Length: 270
Image (cartoon, rainbow, N blue to C red; front, side, top):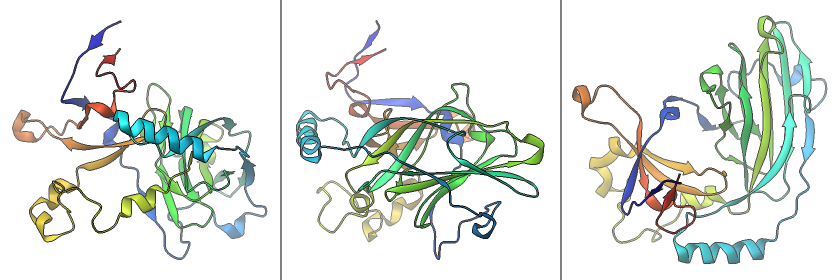
């Protein structure tokens, strides 16, 4: 086993960061670019209620201990699932067909998903949105396919989300999707991210205040990172390198060592 001792920060080459998937707020329940309307759906999506129980007090006690050790903050619990295209409902359309599945985890502030099988056919489009139709991820397309065949989503606010996959006629039954984890947020990350006056440390500069006026472009490189299990978060920033006058746009990601030190022992094991 190789051990790497690193005490400052680690520079990651993040090939997957080239993808441009948009997570957006929606006004008036107007989902964008859908291939089907609610009027075309004669029945609602198949609903899966996870019906999982969590011990909130125990989780918060564990989080307090983790914080004292310097672990990345945890916000959710990852529930193992076995959900695929056979679990949802298909609706035939003139130009193809649409698959829908609704997943609910009661009292969750948000949900995010991990796929251990993920392959979208060319021309297929996947959208994920909450039951209130106030947040949406997508379109997710074949551009997100990778050799490992895995995929993870952003956080969607609320206790219930809907997956909607469109396949055109010419590629019917060509996509593969399997959800192996649903992360139930027991902390409200959206409230935490909105923050409030006085929450920052003395060394922090609020990018939305006059002190941050000279850093607006750089602020676009800052990202929230969901760690491997999808239930913890950290922060990072995209950085370019100096090759070819910074024009090769290799997506390097700079993050803190403790974001990767899962055992909190100052050692990365590979």
